[in-house]
Length: 184
Ligand SMILES: Cc1cn([C@H]2C[C@H](O)[C@@H](COP(=O)(O)OP(=O)(O)OP(=O)(O)O)O2)c(=O)[nH]c1=O
Image 1 (tube, rainbow, N blue to C red):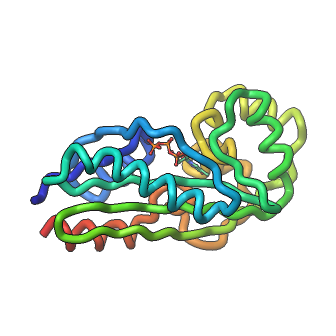
Image 2: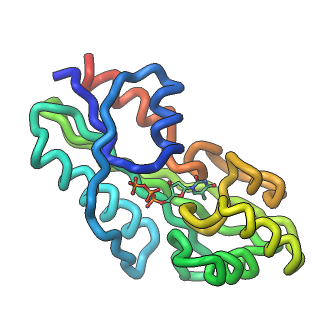
């Protein structure tokens, strides 16, 4: 069945899928994300739960869900709860390399796929004032690690190793070819 559902409320994921030319409906999953000890397992676990929760209602369709997590020194940085937590996250990431993992789960009658991809990001050394100003823009609040590489947050990033779209929340190339296969 060619019907594609994006099980995500992330505007970034909507934009990426649109850019790739897919037609789809958006039905966000309502699961509560969980944080496990391991960041990669956390992202994979949550991506799978998001996809399954929607797919169980729409088994005729192809369902895509994803989860993005930032981590450093064994600590997982999800979406900050408030501005104070966003400032703390950015202070901890300042001047350092950290890792970003995005896991993707695609479920359809033609097959089930769960994969992840990681990238590394180096933040500039940030002053408290720069952090305050960035947090005031509101951009960090719904982003893992409290920044958006595709937005003003790019000004805080010194360097990236790996796939840009993995940091933004949806590794494009793998996702594209799996969707081509299952939607054909
Ligand atoms: C690091 C980083 C994350 N993000 C975003 C991608 C994700 O939307 C968000 C991580 O939270 P997620 O829980 O992966 O996604 P979400 O809650 O926004 O949406 P849903 O669960 O419904 O799919 O952080 C960016 O947009 N840019 C970045 O540079």
